[in-house]
Image (cartoon, rainbow, N blue to C red; front, side):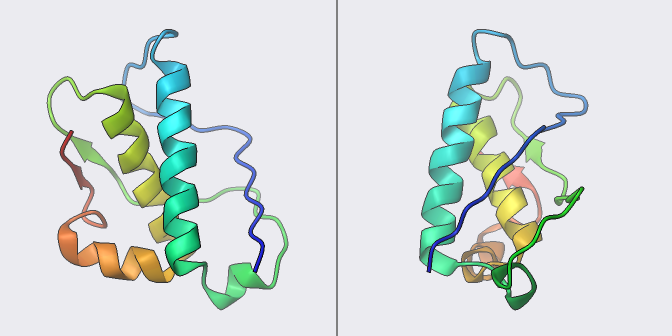
Length: 103
């Protein structure tokens, strides 16, 4: 199955990401989402295709002064949880769904 995911805009409320860190966060989001989607796909609703104007992902809690790659991985795990992939259900047992990301 081929999965095409386009994120037009990512809003990070309460998190300061510098212009220098932004490409590293973006790269980490892309890499982790690709890994998670390849491992578990998405739920039937999304597998049928279509577009969503907005997706509310679970809140992410980060350690103090997280590295950009940790921020990206946590965001990807939260987005994956919203997509209902099998990987999200498995990772939920390891506190990723609860929103804890440890760099």
